Image (cartoon, rainbow, N blue to C red; front, top):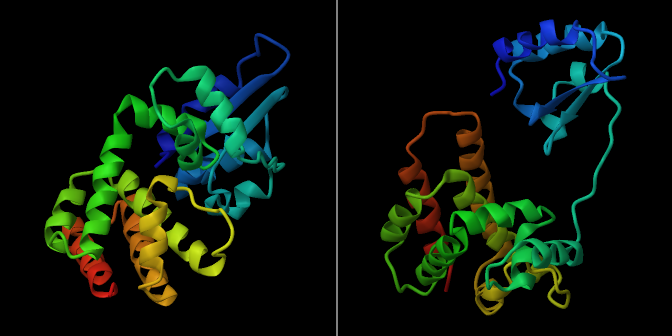
Length: 239
């Protein structure tokens, strides 16, 4: 969360004479403003200092309070295409990786892949997805797989498995279109999509989104218990 104390630290800066023509205040992840911080920021937006620009950056702009967003000019920046991401990675990454796969996994955010490479998360992802599909094939106990997954960073875990589930749903809806992000698991995605009803996939997606929300809002839950429920449901819905 962005706290009110952090917003109040801007007050003396805002009222200083700018060194150049404009003073630019950049607020990243603006959707994380708590209520008190949003109210404090609102005062500055309603009575801005001369030659001061506020740049609020958000990937989930719908979470920004309406009192804030209504006083801003929205500029939508589209995500990078697969081709743009692949070209960027070829110019900036030295690792011997599958650039096409990495560009698909980036989902328009090439810096995410750079972070993954720095933390060796591509190999972690492979172990996570191997376990996920082994559960479907009854090659590993779902409780063991859930325990393995529970040690991973919550956002990485939920986003990686949500990506697989989205690929499965898209394959069921548009089987002739090449929409998969996880191209290295395309055979598993296609085979397993034929053995599970789409409404059950949506149910598992909802559980992951709920878990993601709990983590984002720092709601105290037992993550292992939540994961065990999801993995057991996934195992039960595969023929």
